[in-house]
Image (cartoon, rainbow, N blue to C red; front, side, top):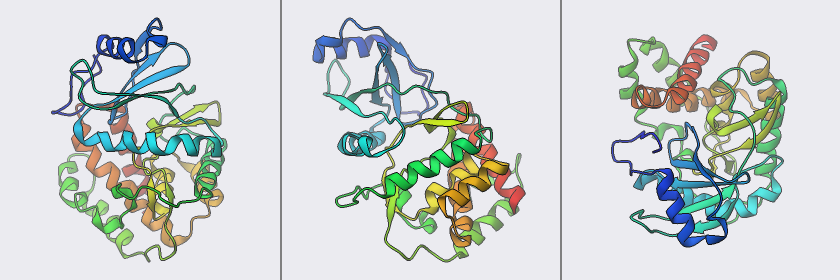
Length: 292
């Protein structure tokens, strides 16, 4: 069974996936099904043979993210310079599982450790975002809160209080206030991946090979995706990412706020459930505070 990350999560295991595939996609019923040791928080993931993966929402509130992927990844995938989990089939509720699910292309690569992705990955990720932003945004999804102003991330302050045993809460709130005080994005909203964490990137050596989990895909402030400077990179790679992405001073300040809004909320929630997410959160907080 896929390890549970949420209190209200469904029981999802390989046997369930085999039954769903056999009933709805008999052409794949002979392929092996293996759980993927994924740190993703929205979907349980199972490998189906060598070239496919099955993704099933874990909880009711993650369903909309998969719906976004099903609607947009088929059109976006050919426009992007790295692999994405484009759907090849959509499963329907069945065998006690209540929601839609997806069969997607398997993407090869390794998840980078926080702060270990190099300058090649930084350039590649910036190139990916430039390609994403070049896509016509007509009809783009707008439901993700990653497209909302940074000030709407109101859970950040109370969550920071839960981190007093690890971090300087006053320092966290000082950076947060500076991010809120920075000039807001006043141009047309741009495409956002919205969740650029190490767990959603795939690399081989110093090259980016894939980007995963487009459930937060939306339009908004590009500073949201600039947060990868703090969640993914460090040192020279961070500087290269900023330059290649073209991040000005105001967006750089806001990117720190976006990184904190992820990390400070995620760390107490996943502290005993998801060590990969927690490692990315701790890295982001430490790097933001070290930069001031």
